[in-house]
Length: 319
Ligand code: CP
Image (cartoon, rainbow, N blue to C red):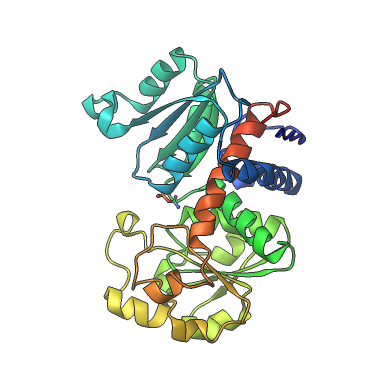
């Protein structure tokens, strides 16, 4: 059985952030992901589209979903892929990031997927290496493929993005997911409200983003939303603790079945993972039919396949 996918080629060499994408670019990626998900649902999940291309996955921060889904995306498109992490590289012997990348570049990869704890690293690498750079999450700055897979998941269930009301809840200040989602969703005409404790909202947030801000109790905020997107508390990026205890956080800001009962009947629940069960979301809600958490993970492979395919020139695909 053959499938031919043909999409306008993304006119970008790199995917550094949602900030660089137009509304049309976003639609192109999401449309391409439809065909990629179809491939991922076949018994034989492999097409020769990127045969002969080499992708290096460089992860300097922990990851389960992003790392595995990029690797699966590369394999399903028949690219050759190599994975390195800081612990297993000569960065642990003191080699600088740029020296590491220049050495990787000397081996002629076509794409480098990079996750790093410092904001701006993908942008720095894009200026110093020949390969296409894909940002797999940089510090508190951006996580563009997460926002794309979230948008794909919302569009898949709700049939549209424009006009939807999306409540993004939790540790906004430290969340690259919140930032990329706010940029993407407002670009495509959705309405975004950030909700969280004041200590976890960035200063001047309403000036920096085209969003509303809500504080108080989550139970009073959820009624507005078509989509409730919960965020993990980014303890690794906080200095002092920004809340008294997990129990107190969960009482005021956690999404429980009782809080969700105040939401619209068709409101959907999302979370990028990893989930702190019982803190920002109760197990009962995370595992409920309203939760799209595992759909997000499935769609992450399709969206990353689409990004690789479009950045690498979108040749006609026969499968
Ligand atoms: N959502 C996300 O980025 O998860 P990982 O950190 O496991 O990749």
